[in-house]
Length: 439
Image 1 (cartoon, helix red, strand yellow):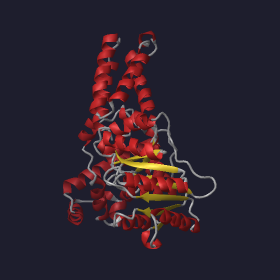
Image 2: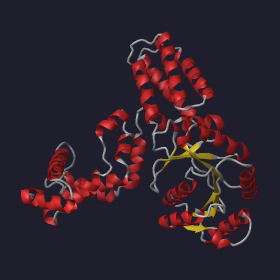
Image 3: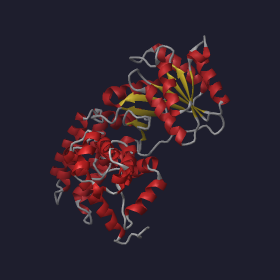
Image 4: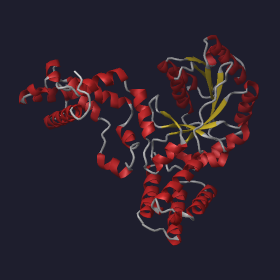
């Protein structure tokens, strides 16, 4: 996410912070470079100008602060101004305290609106918000089928045109909300129709739904890869509907970042979520402070911990920790279990990118192979239960048999076993260094 912007901005600030003394000329030179980087990232000219101006005003008194290097202070100022640019604080969803909360999802075709609706429903289900989906797009033939298929995958209720019959879109949505109430749903997400571009017919339809239902949230789903086009779309919808929040999709790609850095400043509508992949759980809450940290390569340790909490089975993890630090140590079945837990947290390069100081160059050098865990799984599952528990019995002939069964070369099996022994030794060592020895 923001790999190009992050790399350029961090490199520029690193050069500035390495200087012992920051002269006014050096600050001006650095800010000119930052201005250029932001404009290249597709941030609007007005927001870039105001951002640089604000940083410069706050940087004037830097030489008088002797307890911290001036360059580090400048990085802090840029970080704080990025937070303001991104919306200053996290903006969670609002929920109706009485009836079911109605969320309208609006946007153009191709932004990933229907998939985002399902991702949001999956998230709300985990939060015990009892979601229900309404397919209100009567113009795209496959829209209802797509939403109902996704609803079935995440095991939530759904309602669409085939359940309703003849009538207006507004009547369809009302019937869908009634069906949701009958199923005791607490949250109703309405997937509205999109168009290739904003037009009067679409906006009139959405205005009618808004006026009749008074939804708690109107979420605009916009393609984050389109840069300033996404910002223009946000402005257009916000002026007519007064959107309460924005969801930026496709942010796991090589986005220049202009949409995320501009949408709040241009519209005043906060970014509430970002889509970071195709999986149903690839929807992250948007936190300006944490996002600013990721852009400046300070990491997002809080986000990493949250991913771990969502994906990792605490009981299994504690059991594995006790065994790994015991005298006997872990076996290959435990090793495979740990790998599967990591896999649930998402792509490895995405996890590494949340660690402080990790940049895109490091990720390229790390050469994270998304199929690596699958290969490990194939190798371990090609072993007998006895071999998994006692890998020391894996002689040459056994390794050749495992190679044939897993489709992986013998050197790769040897490498895996070597890495496993190193990890086992390290974990046992941690048990002897102040960690309680658990048996």
